[in-house]
Image 1 (cartoon, chains in turn red, yellow):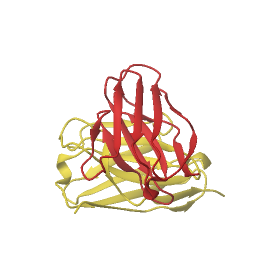
Image 2 (spheres, chains in turn green, red):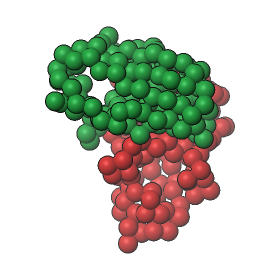
Image 3 (spheres, chains in turn orange, yellow):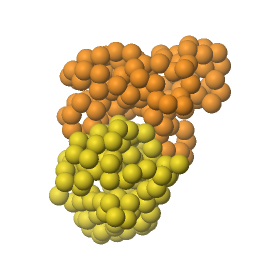
Image 4 (tube, chains in turn green, purple):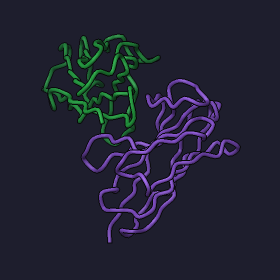
Length: 107
Length: 124
């Protein structure tokens, strides 16, 4: 199975900050990577697919980059509604695996 | 509007069985692969199983292979997960999720719509 490792596991930031979350795959996955946002008690929400494509309706302050084994999710200017947990998911091969999550907290 | 509504969760004893259902609406159900993803209390997301739009292809996580069966009834726009030989470690919120791209045969595991989840608790 492909292991997905996110860093950091948690981060504290302020409204207006730029935040970057990293996801590393244990083997190359081309651009088969998605990013999700999850708020407490809610289902995950798709933000980014194919490593860098913005899902319809997602604000443009979210962006993704990377290919192969190293990927990043960047939030250019944090808004209050962005404080949540973020997960990467590889979709290159079965079983599709998720990173352990990055909790974005208010500083 | 796409809607996914899970049901069938509850409390079950170890070794018992449950059948989860996911009623779908707002899209052409048979054109999309569907997945089940679970989340244990306080933990991260774990993919469980997926099925192609036609129902002809299925995949399972090793942790549930041989115990869980995914299926779908395209005439009823409903996805199922039959869970047998349940263990304490199967305790989780189970989400059904719709593939982000339509394909009758290919299984796309990136999901653009998710249900609200149904809680399965395995305990004596």
